[in-house]
Length: 347
Ligand SMILES: [Zn+2]
Ligand SMILES: [Zn+2]
Image 1 (cartoon, rainbow, N blue to C red):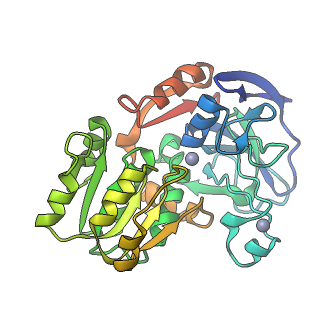
Image 2 (image 1 turned 30 degrees about the horizontal axis):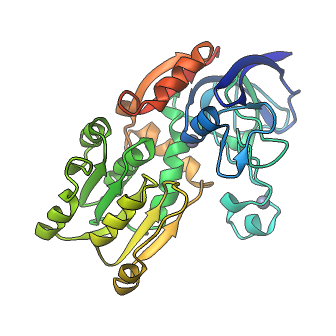
C-alpha cells in the first residue's frame, strides 16, 4: 500500500509522490492526516534547501505540524480508538540517551523529529495522506475541535517551552519583538498566563495588526518609529520579560535598553551571528536564555487549544490542498499576506 506525500528535492523543488505505508506495529496507529501547518523550517528548506550547516542531501518529506483521525490501531494500543481526532507530536526522542535520562528530551542525541535534515539519512516528515505513528505520539482532542486548530499544537508547544523559561508570567510586563506565527503565539500565551501588559514590535504593519487582534496592549512599528520603544519606556515602566522572536540583532539590542534590571530574555528567533552590548547586560544583570523545541508541553498545547484558552483562529490565513503546495509555500513566505498557511490532505 502507498500514500501521497509532499517531498522536497532541493530548494523550490516540491513534488507530490507516492511512498510506501509501513505495516502497523503493535504499539502504532494509522492516522489519516487532515491538516498540516507550514512552519518556518519547512520554508527554509523550500527557499534555501536548508539553514545554517543543515542541508538537504536526499529527497525528504516535509512537515511536522499535523493533526488527523485514527484509522487503525496496533494490537497493543489501549488508549486510542478508530475515529479519535488526534494531534501528532513530531518530537521522537530515544528515551535512553544521557539527556533523555535527565528529562531533557528536547536535547535528545538521537532525536527523530519529523521533517528534519539535521541527521542523515534525513528524518522523513508528516505531510502525507496516511501516517503510521507511535500511539505515544498522539494526543486526543475533542470531536468538536477542528483538526486545523489542533495542527497548531506544535508551534504552540515551542512557545510554551520558551515561556516556561520565564517561570511565572502572571502580572509581568512582557515585550515581544517580531510578530510572525511564533511571536503571535507568544502574545496569546503571555495573555493566557496572566501577563499584565504586552507590547509588540515588528517592522511590518500587517503582523502588528494581527498582534492587536490577539490582545496586545500596544504595537509599535520600529521601522517607521525607530525611537518608539525607547520613548515608550521613558514614560512607562520597563519590561520584565522579553520574547525575542525576530532573530534580528537590532531588535535584541533595542530591547536590552527597555528591560528592567534582572529581566530575562528568551531568544526564540534564529538570526545567526550578533554583536551584543555586553556591558549593558552585565550592569543590568540581565539573563539571556535560549530555547529549543519542546517535548512534554505538547499535551498542554492540545488542552489549551481544545479548551479555547488559546484561540488561534485569527492566525490561520488559508488552507490549500497538498496538490497546490507550491502556491501554499509561496503564500506562506509573504509576510504581508500570510501568518499561518496549512495544507489539507486526502483524509
Ligand atoms: Zn513548526
Ligand atoms: Zn535521547
